[in-house]
Length: 444
Image (cartoon, helix red, strand yellow):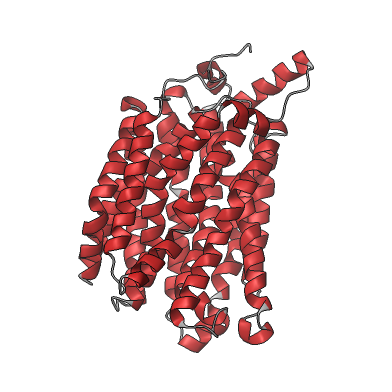
């Protein structure tokens, strides 16, 4: 494959264009996580009561967390479908479809009748919409990060890739902030109409995101691929088949890498919220404020670790973050047990702002650099979303089950985090260093 260098490719976009790509991807990631994490908060605080009211509180909470996990089962399917679309038709059109679809799915969740109104059909419709949401998210993350990394100068891919990744925390901040306001309502109003408002508000964010994305151009790397394919006039094989056939090891590697990032994150933002309010009797408003404080700090830590990875490489940052997360799992719960706002914030800072954020900041550049340009959307999306099934979606369910099996204790849950983080660390040790790769060339 004849190819321009990534340095030359990056120069095809001026600073203003790169800035638009970064902002657009950040907004898209914010909306993605607002939609997805809003569901997690609702699962922890509301859904067990309005969609599963006829079973025991424990069974209802497990059922609620299970529907949260359904979205993650759909994500690899979305990664395959939209990965193929992104590698063949283009990054931009694919991201417009995924963003618009996510907005529709989230809005419809807010329109659902409850169990009291339509019986068993209520949780069935909830699961269907959650599946749709997950399917669309499966194609969103990989494409949004790809747009930034392929457009960035080679020496700033880590930093610029890390900035949109903070969309997960701005989305969490928005979701938690809106829910923190809603939980101030009387219980009957919260359960009747208050919980719906955050889902309906996502429409405004989606409209803004679609406006931003329509103004973007394709990445220089994809434009180069299109030019070469027109010259060669050969029918290209399916990107999904090609990446699974030739780079399946990188897909498996990403799946293990995600354990160190997703398990601590969803434990802290979903399970710990439920555990703190139901078992430790922490006020809902207090734990939501703790989560919001963590989100604010995450903007600075992502920029720091992303820039550092451009200097020292992706692997050292990932290994550090995984080991630190493993070391902080038990202290996190000790500090959570204190019930003190400041000590709980400290616990979240250690586990999330240092451990998780260091890993999360390098994933966009690390994962996309593992694949060649013709299969990059497919490879990064499939690997990330397969890893998200167990590493993310079912973490609240697994954690709740472990806790319930040991008399609402947290020791087995912390042990689960340690094991997941160490597996991610081993995967990072075995991974290649990718920070110096030319993104226009195929990976050997």
